[in-house]
Length: 100
Image (cartoon, rainbow, N blue to C red; front, side, top):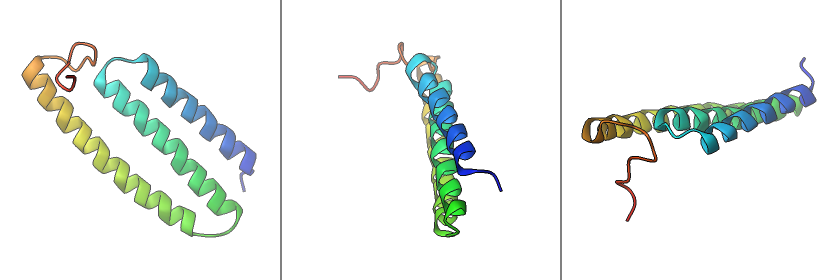
């Protein structure tokens, strides 16, 4: 069995990588991928703590989170596809359609 500290350390590293990607990147697809990495860090926490206390409810919550992340990715990619067809770019600095 993998120690809890290792799983939490990996989760913290994944979260830091995802947060860096959200804050630094301007490409919409890269920001969406970074958000997915952050969600995967949270899912890893669910599974690690569920395994640590021998309770399967965290793993069930992880499966629901994976389904939610898949839906979020599909909707995000559809939005970026429409933005690309309308504006010709998915650069978040150049697309100002959501601003007042």
